[in-house]
Length: 358
Image 1: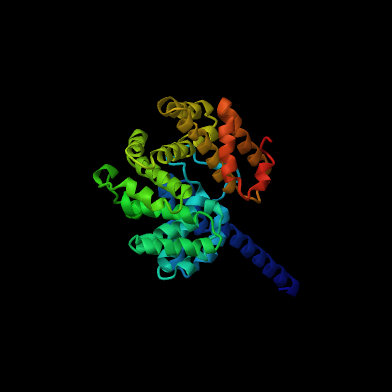
Image 2 (image 1 turned 120 degrees about the vertical axis):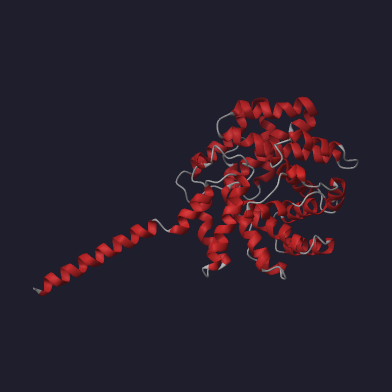
């Protein structure tokens, strides 16, 4: 057999092998798993990401490498990728993913808050930070001095949402432990919420007094999570707030703000502006303008979570930011409230500010 013929066969074999490797790599099991998680509803998505990360860790991977590797795969190229059947949209893919990562680093470095927080940054609405603060507080039995210590370390690292994590921790300590829900979801064993005892919301607000509004907002967010899993009984959440002696106004305003974010924003993004307006109108009519209009501010704030969840390398980025910036116009006379909600969260997203009306 001629020498050059053998060389040609070797080259052909090498080329076929290369193509096959590319083909099988495109069907990498881990990528398939993360895409499966992306399509799951709400807090179940968080559980799915956590199980995925834990399985990857068992294969010898490091947490920080996994966070860097997979975070681009949980971002949206387009808001059209948002699951229209999502029953708990107060969480985007990258926010859920970073919550899961935060849980894991808190558990792996339970004796060292500084080390755990070193894995976090302010991406994806700082979900990693929130989870580390709240999960480590849980691991320390919600001891006040430990919560304060973790928050101080967090703030010294210039991380965002440190105080938000404390608010979740205080709700878990004094009212109902949401972390137990997440852990039960992982085991697929959680009972109905209305069979579980509820504590004292007043004590949670008193504990938050040293931190102020951001802490109160996390309490409102926790109320939202609680009633999301309890038949969406938002009126009962309003009753909780109305029973407070010292923090009634803050509770009502921030709970309605959270309801606007979690329930009205997804309708707006799906093109159902009338449903979003109808939802907020209900609270304006029942609670008055001052409290009810917080619903529209919540819409604006949650629009920013979608902005933060976009793939910054996507060729669709400018188009998507322009679309998200235009959504506040759809709520008519309350568009200024919506835009004020956006500005609350605008922070470092100066590029998005270019798309907003002056």
